[in-house]
Length: 179
Length: 179
Figure 1 (cartoon, each protein chain N blue to C red):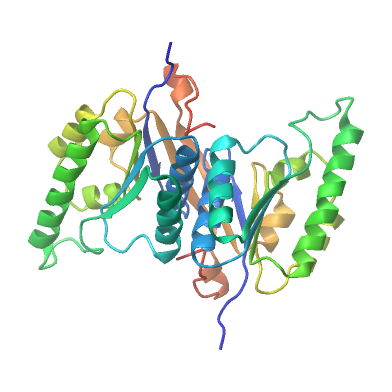
Figure 2 (figure 1 turned 60 degrees about the vertical axis):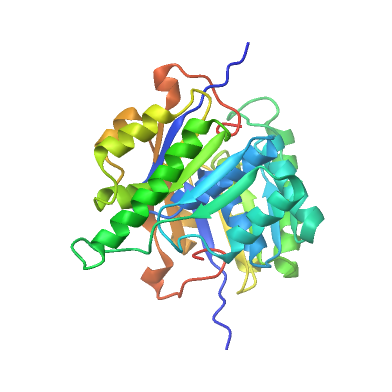
């Protein structure tokens, strides 16, 4: 009998490591022979280092892909809100298609929480995503300000809490750490 | 001018993601062309999935290695304490050698905090490690119960806080997530 059961996982909080831990899970799962899709809800949140590593694993064994959708970070009420909303909508349709298709063992919806908290994704769309999930598929939602609706439905929720940051010591962002 | 500056990073807390986020950093750094060494202070804390992924990246481009030292999880005052202490000591000497050698851009001391909190590593040994670090080398210490001494000396400290766990719903550990 197969004990496999997909989990709904949330990485939230204002600390570092939300996306990085999702990347770690992707890598571990790939190493376990699983098929992993990463969907970026915020353009530019993944940088050269992880893209290169993922491409290398994909070249070696397939089964891992990253797709960029959405636009860059936005602010509530800015003039491009409609454009951001359309970009999120498009990615959401693609996410629904991939999730319900059952091709992937793990799908990471990176910065979903950000897009959701800024109103780029509606509650009924979150419900659609959760309902579309085949029982064995893991879904990982990252980003600060995870909604109560999502946390209620999740199996595993981790909050990354910032205890100390190099900015506090006046140290600039460092390659491999911040980007 | 080179702005590169190594950071002392700590992932602690009782939540998930301490080692997984360190793995993500390792992968990202590798993708950025950096040389990454992972030292496991607790035997068996890394499993097939991540070992396979790391071996694949190493086959493709070198520059990433994982070495196992230390023994399995222990309890204070158990009869093998001396044996654990010797194993930790050995790994510590190897860590000091690798850190001071300057060969690596990033060294992850996985479950160091655990070994330290159980008295397998002494405070003066922690000081030796921190003092041996070349200015451009990143050191990442993972494990719950990070010591005050380490947090004081760290640049970036993140605490992983468990908000909700699948055990609470009676769901068994899942491949790719827990191992």
